[in-house]
Image (cartoon, rainbow, N blue to C red; front, side, top):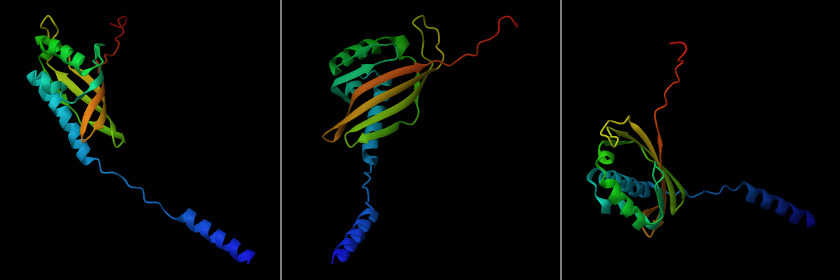
Length: 170
């Protein structure tokens, strides 16, 4: 009898260990569309200086830092800063060229998004043309009910690298 119980335990353990769990993988396509739409609307807001559209997808408590180190920590502060920025004609000149957004879902309600924008034909305050700016965005989104809101947005900039020339050789 002991041998039968022992044998049943071995067989049961083997079956339990070898059973494959099917892991449910969520389809995030709808969420990706919503997030991509918020970024497209940000771009449109920038082009048209539409302040309300620019802040529409930010959470009330948001942490936003641009490539020049300007930091805001609420939607209200962001609105005030963007109102100032949208009034700077030399900043608003130029065109955006966004690449594909790289979206990673950390869970069902948190996502990170990396985007690259090549800004062309922007001007310096004196009106001279800037080189193309390679601007990187890192956004953290939180899903609240069925909408995605930006809780953190960090913007950085990489200038084209120049090769160092040997001044002695010339």
